[in-house]
Image (cartoon, rainbow, N blue to C red; front, side, top):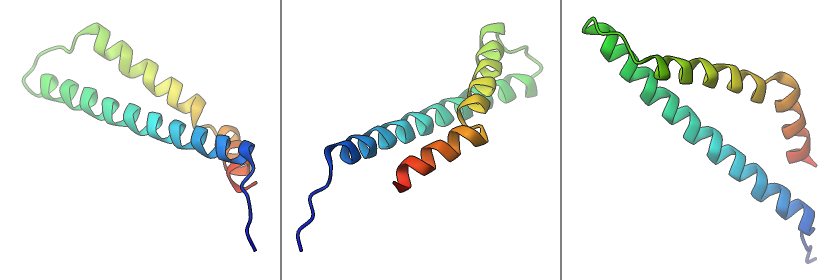
Length: 80
């Protein structure tokens, strides 16, 4: 039996893969910035205010993105 995948499902899969890739890239950036902050703090220097602001903004955005509702919704779509 040959099955043809629906275009909407293919589009959904591509979108979910893109979101996953974007989230992974953001996590990598966060790790890099966080490491820079820790390095500066170890030598007694103050990290730039912009960097601290970016880290705080990132944390709040990731909380919104990965809230239980958002993850459940993405998972539900992925399983459909």
